[in-house]
Amino acid sequence: MAKSDSHLKRGHYSDGHPLDEVQYLECKIILKPDRFTSADGFREFGKLVRRTAGEVKKVEFVKDPSLRGRPSVREVVFLDTADFRLYNHAFILRRRIAYDDGFPVGDPEIVFKFRHPSLQAAAELDVRPNIPGRYRIKFKAEALPLRDRIGGVRLLYSHNCEFGMSQVRDGDRTAMATLARVFPALAALQQSDGERVSLVNEAIVEEVLLDLGSLDFGKGVVAKANVALWRTRGEHRPLVGEFAYQCKFEKREDVHVKARKRCERFFIALQEAARDWISLGTTKTGTVYRLNGNAPQSHE
Image (cartoon, rainbow, N blue to C red; front, side, top):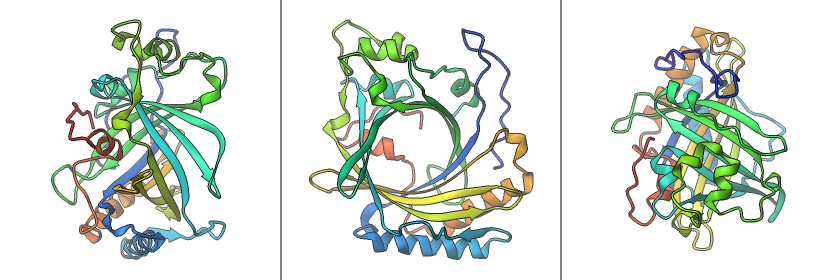
């Protein structure tokens, strides 16, 4: 995309490991939740995506025949101090649990991320955890519409670490002392020995997500697309929707310039086509943090 050409200065983390480089492009459009009262709302938006792809030259929407055609459900919670110290310093800590036929499956997933508009700042923050087991680093460029109008692109850089919760062996997983040991990047935020984190705004989010298929931008650039609704568990209060598509690459230079331009043209065309659906100026995480009218500092 046009604004994704920020130059990353080479460098190393404290142990000599070279700085991580962006290997994902994820395009997101935040949607008003009111139309997602059933799976039909997801499918209606999917038709809009398919129709828009057909109108943008050399962009193809590909339906995956292996998709089940019904939404999946995940539980998402965010953890932070009472004064939102993590979020105020551009950190996000969440736990996600997948459900299959109504029952939780697999190891709950911990996601720790540093999200910032500066590529250099995002890259230089070492998100690697201090755990004995395996983890995965995902460094993304996230494209969003402009905060105040339809038809543009802004970028955030999300430096993520993901692993199963069972790999945190400390007994007290909500103590800031534990988090500072597991995530050394948080050590500077700890103010006292007895500090703890808790659910942000006491909210448990139910994510209902439907995989739509893939968008083919040519030159080997294919992005999986989905649409999701976030709502509160229990009350089923709708919070926010999101359409997203993501592609992976080894190096940014590997992504052909024509494919990047097609991706941007589609992103802007979809904003125009879906303008009545779009909610500007927020993210899913920001919506949860503002549930009780709080206004923490945001780097989003």
